[in-house]
Image 1 (tube, rainbow, N blue to C red):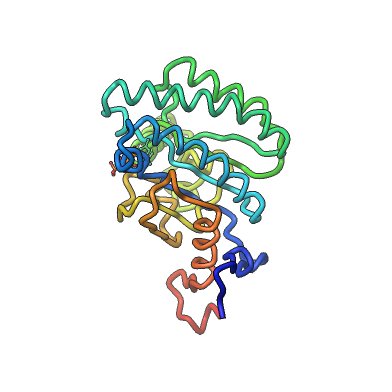
Image 2 (spheres, rainbow, N blue to C red):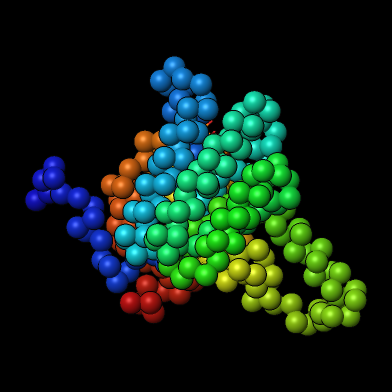
Length: 253
Ligand code: IPE
Ligand code: IPE
Ligand code: MG
């Protein structure tokens, strides 16, 4: 019988940890509002949680952790909030670089980072460069990211290559498409598990192609209050699923 002190950590099968966990870190604004605070405080608390969960993911044995930090659609928020968020992200990356080095972790990004203010792009580029030889956890920031933008960009580039005679239409299969998305170009496999916090039951333009067979986990918990236990609970839930990839249960057992 479970006691109150039982941790989900004890229920994790270390041999079946998802290699790639992607998280839609949602609910910062509501968390703050529910406490009578400005939205910005929610974002601030959110990056603290991000730091903790990245360490927890590594400890759990996750190899790739993708964090949806800012969508292309988020550029439409009030300038004040966007600016505050950008400042918070720069602070985070500047502080995190040392820790990523200590942990042998590597930073990668997906998204239209040319849209970022120059100081933000510079901070991320510097961290990516500095951590580029690290061989441990890959922490991937989806930053100014939208899946339709990513797919559209890939199609345009492939069309240009085809027009230049460098690619033949016969070469274009699923493997080719995967390999030419920003994830594939950086050898990032498809997510095994996608977590969304805050109770919203949608994908919000995140990794549409890549999550074709990901296990989805939704929790009402707001991102600023997401804990290690919540993370491990999602992993345990994932481990109880049967990933059939179109086959029958008997075939995959
Ligand atoms: C997620 O929290 C962070 C970003 C989208 C940047 P929100 O800011 O979307 O918080 P809610 O959904 O308004 O509560
Ligand atoms: C998705 O959250 C993007 C991030 C978490 C960065 P949003 O809060 O922007 O998504 P919607 O607008 O509610 O779908
Ligand atoms: Mg939101």
